[in-house]
Image (cartoon, rainbow, N blue to C red; front, side, top):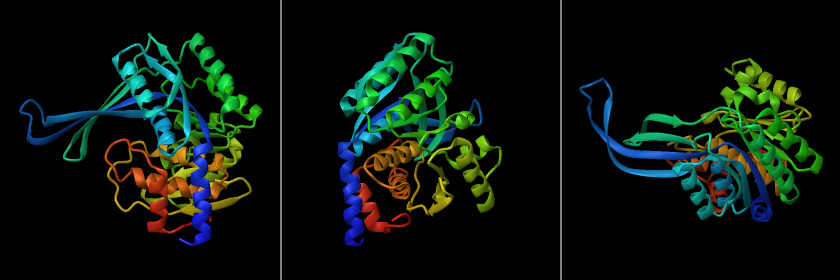
Length: 335
């Protein structure tokens, strides 16, 4: 890397330490059951997995907060868990990670969202989901929005992590966006495709290719349809940037003012894309808060995604790993 580029990159990543991020969204616990397969069940044509271990990791909005802390910034998490063992375990893990969880509410009427993945020989065999998708009750919605208003003055950027599990109701979502805009705090969204058109006037959205095409009503199959969807969403939502992640094809950034930039993937090996979207929106939001341009933020998030998809299971990136990735792959677009 050139000395001026490396100095600018370091200035941005060092600036992560000064940022406080308010994360609002659906909290999950990611559970992994590890094992091997040596036979097929005589009861049905399915593999028999002989389990050898179990691990749990932060998932959903909790993984976003984990990424923030891993990159050196402060994270305050707003969401809901159930009054159950997974909820208590999740709260305990948040505390160990250093995430501010005083605004995580407990709802005894809903279970904590748990995704259980059975992994055999480094391959996911099946996933089970324990969750409720019903909207939060009115009291919890009010409590959540009150906490958003309370802590927005201390936030440098807001991340909305929407997995469609009922926390981000229309009232909560509209309140978060309205309060943030009033306070001049940028909002970055990792969207749920079925409500993507609800994120009007946010700073940036980071849908994947499927989510973007689904929301716009046009399947992305080539460069022409990609640009039609990207520019269409940009105009409909009125946001500063639309960053569409495209798997092995990298990412595409559509900026207000008709500026388009493509970022080829920097990942040489892909083991698991679980949680990659969490990493993308985190790195983008932190870079933006630390003074990066939209292009620079997209470039940094592209490298961050390339780091986490090399690992099996939900993972996070660090600033040192980011610098190493740029060293290995060059500065790329946006600088």
